[in-house]
Length: 94
Image 1 (cartoon, rainbow, N blue to C red):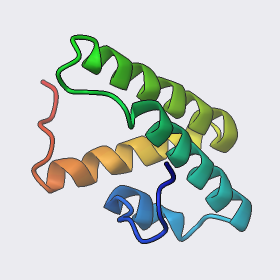
Image 2 (cartoon, rainbow, N blue to C red):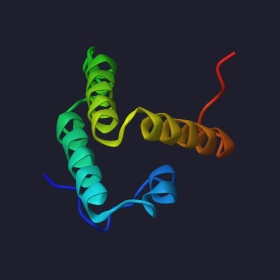
Image 3 (cartoon, one colour):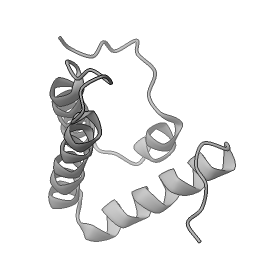
């Protein structure tokens, strides 16, 4: 199953995607699709759900870091975390 172009893009992605080149956008779409493919058939009832989700996320994050570089990867993660926290979706670690 493919992610359709009409599906919502997370705000954290949309906010920095304006700086992407066409190649960057293509890679981001491929990474998004790969993550979707990895988790699409997971069931929350599976006892290994969290481990499988986290493994797919870790792999996707690593591929992102390899393509975009460590600085851009860290900047994106900081921005996504900050925006998520500002929207009340995540609590800061103490």
